[in-house]
Length: 116
Length: 111
Image (cartoon, rainbow over all chains, first blue to last red; front, top):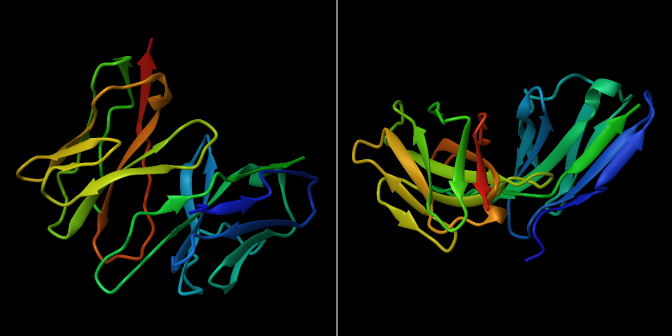
């Protein structure tokens, strides 16, 4: 079990540039979550998908943020254009959601984004 | 999901048991108690979860009071590598919703 795989591990970009973060969930998991962590606000949910369909995107800060899940094994989080206040660690997590139970979330090791 | 309350920080001597408390007085009957930890620069790591019975796995034990209004995570023999922020989270069974993280407890294991 390779776990949740995120890339890149670190990303440094200039304000105004487009940033794309990638996530490969654990095989067999059907729920995927994007979180953001900062010192000021802690861990915040941005969006989550169930069976590749976005269920709740109320945590997405603004229209500059978008997320897609084209298939069960891949998701992207895109920021366009990026701003310095987007600097944070972005985590992807996955779990299995069944008829009456949900497995624990398993997190990747995150992407540390720095926007200068 | 029910709100949880944890102490902001705790210390523990290496080799001793670490007992981390959590209050969740508004927990509902179908809500589980989950524990995660986050070691610096890593993603949160699942530790254990339970409904009302005590649970044990290779990492820790979870003791839930009979009224389910509080719980304790026990690391039986803490090591320096257990230094982390520990999060107690309450979440409904069968929910595909996200976990909502609070501030957690910073556990520091001292040599």
